[in-house]
Length: 151
Image 1 (tube, rainbow, N blue to C red):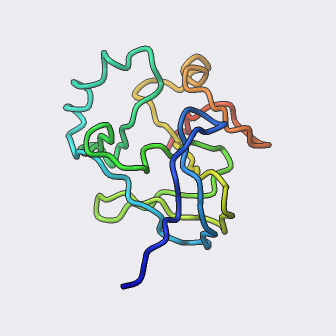
Image 2: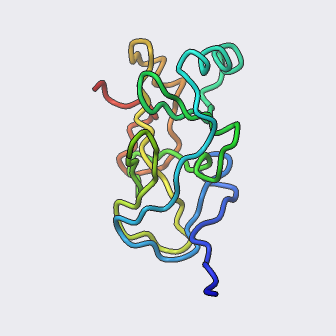
């Protein structure tokens, strides 16, 4: 039986808290990991976290659509530790309401895996809201916030 070599590891990140780092070279367009967690409704997510995270921009929720949210604090995996970057090396692929992290370019061993969170708020994207969701990615063209442009 062939031994499968791990492609990434979770450890302390210079961007924020914990991060996910490549252990091997990862070619462009490689599906790396699925974002896993308990699948709940938007209403359930609001009930669970609206007060608990009222003053914290840090959550492990991935909004799949207006009905479905993946809560990685319950039954989550390493994908929940992938940090935001304004110049990401990964991107999100939504396949039948399953979320996958894929490389958008070749990734070198030791590089931190990142994707653009492109946060969409249920409120106007004011300067204060953008500051509240500050970005610390350090990219040359960092926009200073994890909040995305309106879609």
